[in-house]
Length: 115
Image (tube, rainbow, N blue to C red; front, side, top):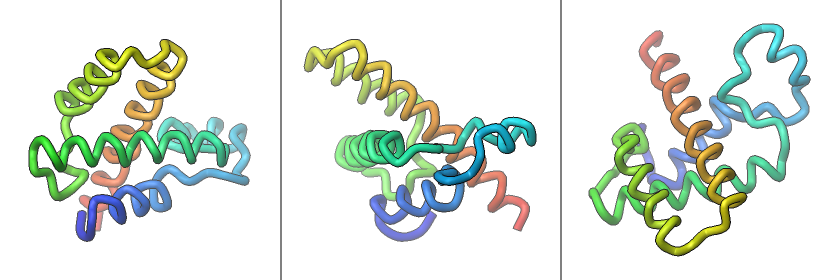
């Protein structure tokens, strides 16, 4: 993707994960909802995690595109959170956010491949 890492993450959310005010039931019935975020509070916390992960990947690995972020980088970021003794409930949120990030990233890559 092009642009700053921050802009890439915002674009990923808006292009692939934004589902606020869209019925979960309709999306689930269509079978397309695994990468979507339905609540503004979830969006806020997940996108914050996405930005933190991207900053980590950029500072440690020199990543310039979110497409370069790997599962290994995410695991390393999570390991750092464990070392900081982040609460188990927060870790669960982090893991969910990262899962949603890679889901949305894959959907975005598939959409770009079709162009």
